[in-house]
Image 1 (cartoon, rainbow, N blue to C red):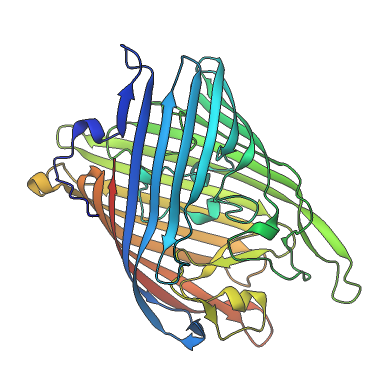
Image 2: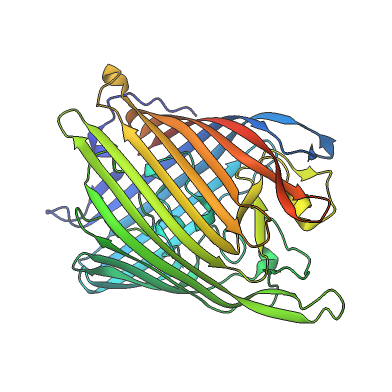
Length: 433
């Protein structure tokens, strides 16, 4: 089945298809869909293999994300949100599998606008803005993955079963949640690492996750109907927020006390972050706009923890199998997150509307992650530069993105240092309503 989207996108579909349940349109059912389709060329990390065959470069096509969202406001106090979809359907994927529920949750407004309490499979997350990103309105190609702090280890793609509270008090927007993590033995992610003197995710029964995110919204207010947060409003709103949050899970990690006695030691996950978001029109007549986001995170996953992974990885393994770090460091992988301090920025400029007539306009962007992880001898830096061709806003857009990432491996002294840098070029088409 193919979908043809004209540049003049139907106005009534820009925010999903709604069926109203009340004369004043305050109660409704809403259906939304999104697809993100990739064509990509990747310079693979040294030692990369695909089904045990060495491969220095990969050209592939994939479905990065597909979503169907069914949501609604049933009464003055009752909301529900259901999301179903799939990630990373590529030539390596298991066939006829992979789709799953991302969200199944409902909440009740105890005090309208100020306090809603909900439950279910949900993503009301901390510690930062993009711990649950609104996929329709991502500014860059991909949101900063390090902010999805336990993705597919203790959660189901940053969601878990639990209860949450959300609301607004004046200009303060808040969300807090308590969730029961999934046991790591059922993960579909990178699997279970063997225990060593560096921490890894514990296979012991998990303790509850406590997390929250708070943002003071100085100018226009953002919706908190759904847990995901926008990356840009492309000039439709004037937003200036300062935010901060936390994530805590007791005894979530474990390690050996030393290489000799090998006593098991448990450690907590303790994460903190502060961020700033500014997204504004520059010239409302022309439609130009500017966006900026910055975040500083202090992550503690225990002693020398590091996670090496590659988004939508085009490879399957590495010929370098000396350590668990080497085994995971294939394809487009890099040290994604870990114990240490992380700085991140993203920014963009949107040109005037109708730069190309009825074929839309351009929005060049840049982002950079700079991480000082305890386990690495030197800082890790990865950046993206690209441009969104907004054919019909974010409902129909093409993104051209180049990412430059480091390759880390051990030197003669056993220290993990940057040995080389590699690139990946992606063309993405996004269609959504």
